[in-house]
Image (tube, rainbow, N blue to C red; front, top):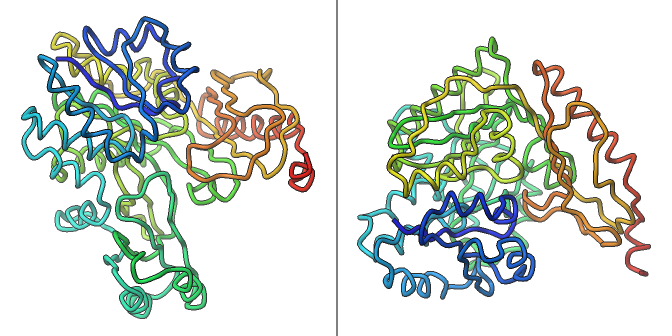
Length: 413
């Protein structure tokens, strides 16, 4: 099998050329965006075959050109590592005859309305929801179920386009900014109050190799609003850990049309009645620093293992019931202004990995997607309390160590 892997530059640069070479196997190649062509070329060298495209995420021609490329290969298989590529990869594989109805199956992992509809039909709790195509449908939903409401794209990613509206006036203001032609692919749902959890996992040949739940202390929407995004693994004696693992496995194995070898990223809430409420699930790992977090915790790189398993029939790691150690991770967003200086190493105890993606003397305008943070760090600890304490230490130290100028100064410079 010759893997053709759709891969954003940010993911591509997280792994060494040697790691990519081993994971892709003979004849495998990476596809990515030409916006960071020099950096990618220097990173991969001559070790890994790759091809770059202008406007990779949004160009309609990418899947046409990749189809033509793939049909010249003996045994191609297109693979998506980011949510935006899931459907176009499925379409290419279907067109090549490698898969049958892969696009229809993948839609349940991309279309949040279809996903939740199917989960509800199978007895899983979801928030009240509706697809909306005009202003009247949005108002009627709010009149029936009350506020707050959440409006978002059915196929959104990175929390982009998500709006939480607290009352009728905010809904009216939101509607005032739209036209009748901008209601395409939208849904509305009731806001769920509760604790936020994420479960990431890896399946190979239908077996769960790892299923890893974490508690999220800051929501994705708060992250977009400028707060740090911190999360940590759960204690072995925390009953929520096994409960979330069972929930995730049931959703993947019994409810959704899942590929036997896959990655997944599940977000959910536990409400005031202690009921698990589905937020969404994707057939890829979460963004930010999840792959590194899982690698440190479980001793296996899930992304590289997933790719290797697709082309190497002899690579079949054993399922793991528990992590090797407890970890947490934090992602810190940029402030609005000019970043004059930023620390490139961290002296704090217990920090396993520390990555700066910010550049000195660069002006920032805040977050746009949930993957535009400027710092990622992973810490190790003995339990949840110690992990939370260490994450707070990293955040405080980082803010104290950065030198920011206000946005008005940045504009002058």
